[in-house]
Length: 465
Image (cartoon, rainbow, N blue to C red; front, side, top):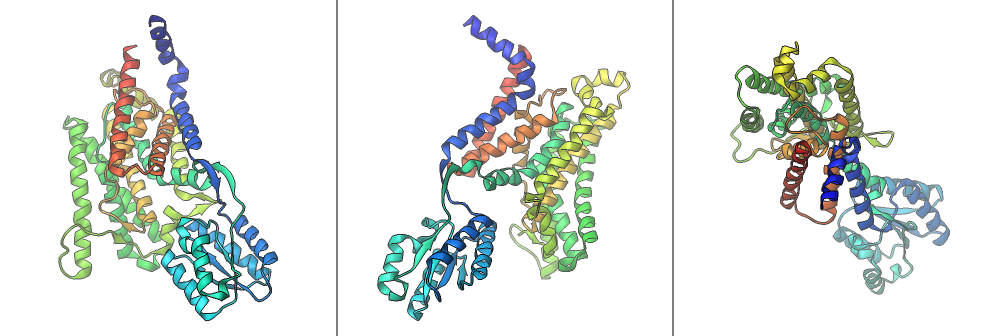
């Protein structure tokens, strides 16, 4: 027992655990979910669509047409577009593309059968449960009723075995869906390193989303220019910057504990977001809006590119997140401001006596944290094409979990931006795994709460050692 304790003590003291422990945890989680999701995969890509089109062209008789069946997703639409283009190139007629529910597909097949249309093939990426009417048993029933469907075959891409978790689509989705949380975690890292806390980031995100949406609809609407969109996004982020300055001033000049200040700011900001949404919707309707206000819809189509677009097949929110982390890494590791953060978190009074502008540093970190939340709000508004006054609920839980799991000490003076990025990815991977397992959102809150508690216990154990 004594030998085990000594080994654990040496392990916790080692630089490897301090610097790369969270990375090791992330690798273990990825390995576990990869093992649990290993199975047959149906490719859904442009290359798969071309492959199916060529196979169909060689198999069906001249004059027969093809029905394409897909889900209403971006990947399916790319698959269908490539499939249709290749079929047209091979001089094969595409009868229709169905992307609705199984009921829509069933109705279409009944219409084709009743009309006696010469249908030679059905093309899809996966003839599974989501496309019920084209499963073998259901297709056989249609063929018994409608003789014109007797020669119809279902064509799908050649499958392969690979973990569902490790598919490119899933990995990009894991990071993309949590990019706003990771962005906010940058500012939260700086706050926690100075021995503070900010519970208002989720509500501040909602303020940014609502302000951006209202400004965009009021100043440009559907015809807003790039300059107008940038200005409206700036207004949303600037409103959050003011919230952060308020938090910093209350913490420094009025000596109110950060927990109390940001708890109050959380409620105030959420109320402001709801009030703005209600007032704006009442203004549009010419009356009063009762109940919880709906999201303020953004009609500027090009604005959605920030949250839903891609550059070099990588979602823009991921690129934005990586750019901000690169900038934060440079600030934390290569500037005087970064050194000031650690000095203030380690011992604020000693830092003040050493000439560090403690008050300015504390105000700055709360302003930066709110600004990161503001950027997250703009991304949220773009992704959902509207300003949601209820956006960011309980984001503070995920953000703090990402920072603490990444190795930043709640006692202050210790933490790294790279560790926070790793912690954010750990949270994202856990959330993705829980979603795959069918765990409900309210049950996931228990997991994240225990995760924070466990990380803090480990941190305290390290300090005692």
